[in-house]
Length: 144
Image (cartoon, rainbow, N blue to C red; front, side, top):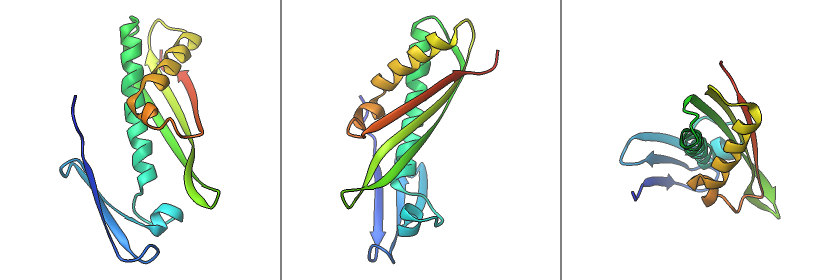
């Protein structure tokens, strides 16, 4: 199996400093700061990267589950929201909401949701985030 990398450099103090993060060996770079993480400032933050990683992993896992059971999807689109909250005085990822839509022929809503739950349980990023108190899933079919 593959080993993937990411890196970040922070300069300055916590509130006044800033950083740059890199996905892979330069596939994507982004700026981050205290304001982009804990307020509404410009830039990205670790939680957005976790959300993107979770959405990507889950979408692939669901496509795999569906295909394995004879329901090849036309598309699976997932949005993840990572909720950073103050827990016992510490910033904590306490909840993640996964909202997925599948364009899949010859499957009903209940069967689709069943496969979505299986994908949520088996997705490597979901498993890595097992310490998150709540990971909620909403799954529905779209298209025709």
